[in-house]
Length: 621
Image (tube, rainbow, N blue to C red; front, top):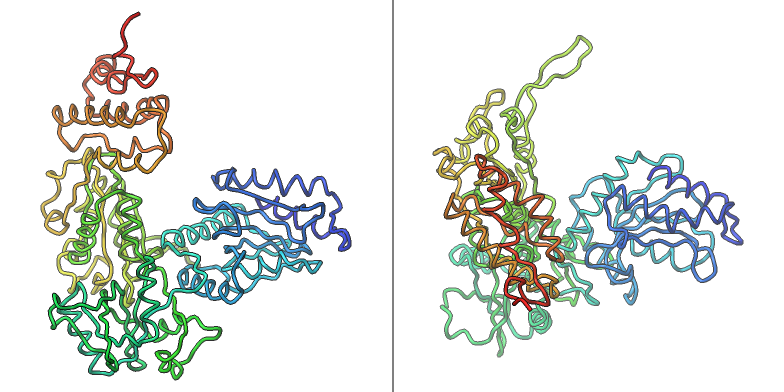
C-alpha cells in the first residue's frame, strides 16, 4: 500500500498540465484501475466488488485520480457515504477521505449535513476535519465536489507515506466511522429535520423535570397549535423521522427529549402528566415527550446548524425563528437497529436495556453460536452509542494485573523499575469518570478465566457502586456510575450452575438459547434459498433435541452457525464438517469417531433434495 501510494504521487508529479498525462500513462492507468484496488482488497480484507477507481474518463485524464470503497448500503458515490483515496493533482499528497454524495443537493444542505456528521463522530481521534485541497491543475468541477463532500480525512504528504500497518489502522478507523453512520440510520434529507425548540420559564422547566422524574416513560406538553414547528413536527413523525425537543432557560439550563407523538384529544390521559408551555391559544395540542435529560450549552450550540455558529445571546431568540435543527447519533434509534441485526423481540431488547441501566452489569449466557457477542455489542451501542463501547476477551491466562492493575517494568537510566500500571477495567473506568455520556465494557468469554482471581476487589465494587475501596496498588478506587458491564459466557465450556455464588449475586443472567424462530426470521428477509429453509430448520431442531435429551440445553448448537448469505447443501456440509461436528466430538469425547458419525448423521439430518423432494421420499422406478 505504501509503495503503491508513493508511486502514484511520483507519476502525478511528472505529468504536463496541458495534457494531464504522466510520463508513463500505461503504468499509471494499470496501477489506478487494477493493481491498486487488488492490493487494497488483499491487505484490507475488502470485497473487490466494493472497490472502484478511475484516472481516465471521457477520453481524457482526470484531474485527481481516486480509489473509492463502498459500504454495504452504498454502491455509487453520489448516493451515500463512502471512503475514497483522493490524489492531489500535482502529486503533493493523497487524502483518505470519508466523503458524502453531493449529487442533487444544494451546497448549504451539504455543509449542514457535514457539520452534523462531524458532531456524530466528534470523539474519533487523529482525524482531520479541515477542508481538503486537491491542488487541481485545471478548473474541473469534479475535484471541487470531492472537496465539498469531504467530512473528515487523513492526509499523507509526498515522501512521508506511513507504513502499511499505519495505513491499515487509519483505514479501519474511518471505516468504523462509516459503519457508525450507517448504524445511526443517518439519512439524506433534502431539508434537515426540524426540532421543537422552546424557551421556557423557570417554573415551566421545574414542572417538566418533576413530572419527567415521576413519569419516566413520558409526559405531555400542552403547546399552542400556532407554534411554528408543530406542523413540521407532525409531518416528520408521520414519516418516521426521528424528532426531538430542546428546552432552554439560562446558560446553565439546557434540556433535551425525544418527541413521540402530537395529539389533540387527552380525555383518556391523566391531567397530572400534562405541563403547559408558553402562551396558550384557542387551539392547543399535546406533545408527548420522553427521555428528558440535561445537555450542555455547548452541545445545544452544536445542534443548531446555521451558516455560522451562534453565541449564548443569540440562542435566546431561536424559539422565534424558522431555523432547522439536527441531532447527534446517540439520539437515533439503536434499539430498532439492534432488532434488525439480531431478530430478537423488541420487548426482550428493552428488558436487556432496562436491566443493564438499573443493575449496572448483566451476563449473556448460552451455548456456542447463539449470537451472544453480537447481542452484547449491539446492546452496548443502544446504551452508549458507537465510540464508548470497549470489548475485552478473557482467556485462561488472563490475570488480575491485566484486568485491574499490576506492576509492569519501566526502563530507566539506572536500569529497570516496576510501576503500578492500570489494567483494561481501570483505564476504561478512568475514561468514563466525570463524563455525562455512558460507557460500556464488554467482557467476552468471561468464564474462560479464573473469575475470582481476575476480578479481585471488583466483586465488592460491583455490589456497592457508590463506595470506594483500596486496590493492591491504588487507594480509593471507585467504579463510575456511568460505566456498564456486559459479560458473555459459553455454557458449553462451563455450566451456569457452576458459577461462583458471589458472581451470580452481582450479575443478572440472561440465557440466549438456540432458536429456530430466529433462524426462520433471518431467511424470511432473504431471497429464496437453493436448499429448503424448512428442511434446514427441521434438521436444526432434530439435532438440538437429541443434544438436549442426551446432555442438556447448554450443549445445543446455536442458530448463527446456519445463518449464511446463501444456504446450499454443499455450504451446509462444509459448516457441519468444519465447525459443528468437531464441536459435537468435544461433547462426546469418549465416543469413537465412526460411531459418532452414525449417531449424528448429516445425511439423515439434512437429506439431499431432488427436484424439490427429499430423495428418501422418491419411489423406485
